[in-house]
Amino acid sequence: MKAKVIAILAGLLVAAGAGAQVKDGAVIVDAVEGVVTVVDVDREARKVLVRGPNGREVEFAVPAEAQNLDQVHPGAKFKVRYLQAVAVSIAKGGNATSSNSRSMQLAPKGDVPGGVIATVRQLSGTVESIDQDSRLVTLRGPEGRNLTFTVDDSVQGLDQIEKGDLIGVEYAESVAMRMLPQ
Image 1 (tube, rainbow, N blue to C red):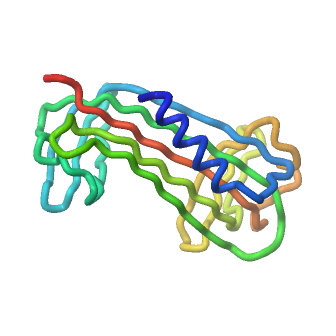
Image 2 (image 1 turned 90 degrees about the horizontal axis):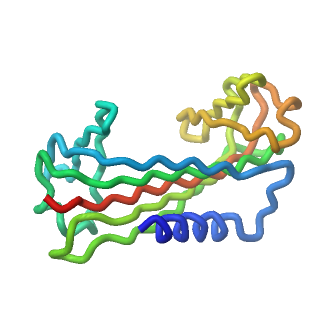
């Protein structure tokens, strides 16, 4: 499953960035893996609340295409792998924009519940805050939502960015889940 998640994520990043040049940019990939326990299932709203090993609870929206929600119940355990890749390009000027692409590979009906969902977002927006020491940037996108991300040391030109500047970001998130045998 790990190779499949990485392949989908890499494919999405390549497809989303095809024809685009990331000048003064870098890609950062962060991965977390663990076992979560289902706390609650709302089949009508297609939402599942899970608790991670650290006690933190997260709610997942289950896509309409997922066919095995009937097998998910409180107490069920899922192996989860979460990947996030951020490609940051520093470019001033232009207008705030946003685009998304999504890919899913879900378990067939009757199989063990699970699958991979990967989303790539490209956006440009206004820098709301910047911490040069920790290299944290908060960007306000065109919909008014904030996104905070870390800019890798290899990205050149961060010291030229100030609050109020318009910059571009591309990031991908991938979640892979598979229910463990009970």
